[in-house]
Image (tube, rainbow over all chains, first blue to last red; front, side, top):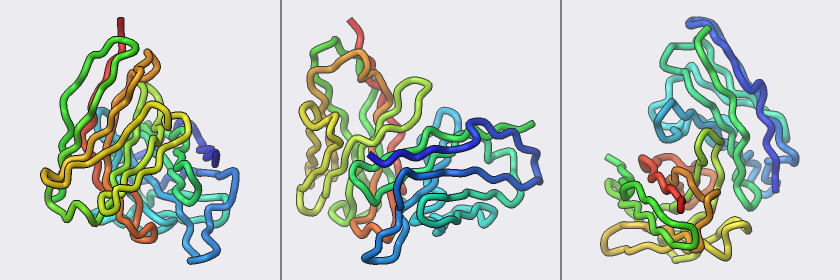
Amino acid sequence: DVVLTQSPVSLPVTPGEPASMSCRSSQSLLDSDDGNTYLDWYLQKPGQSPQLLIHTLSHRASGVPDRFSGSGSGTDFTLKISRVETEDVGTYFCMQRIAFPCTFGQGTRVEIK
Amino acid sequence: QVRLVQSGAEVKKPGASVRVACKASGYIFNDYYIHWVRQAPGQGLEWMGWFNSDTGGTKCAQQFQDRVTMTTDRSSNTAYMEVKKLRSDDTAVYFCARAPRLAASGGPDYWGQGTLVTVSS
């Protein structure tokens, strides 16, 4: 199975400041047939279901603020928040869906300093 | 609007079975896959499998292949996931989520509220 390793495990942030987190894959998530990278990012707020932020490496999901951006290539990926807001608190998961079975990273918990 | 509404919490004994329902509305049911994901208490997300609502095809992670069955009822736009031979480590919140059939269009985007399944003697 593809292993996704997220870092850091915990990320204290200051509202208004930028933040970033990493997701590294044990194998490339680039589909050489269509050129797409099948890496998604989710935010799970406390007590809620996960919500899709970014799909296919860098495409923001509908309704997601433009302060969220996804980037990377091959096996190294980054989620950036340009200016953190208090509502961004929660656990962020990356997920790959190029290889069977789909797998998730273990999560990065974002908390306000 | 798109909604996935799941059935209520269940308490089961080891060895029993549980079926979780996921009723979809607000979109064309057959145009999307249904994924199932679970989350043990205080843990991360574990992908279980998907169901192709159009063809009826399914794909299940290996560790669940012998015990998990995914089905749908197109007449009511409801997806079901049954887990048999429950063990204590199956205690988790089970989520359903829809995903576009075309992978490039995105991953699981709308999720149900989750169903807590507790396995205890």
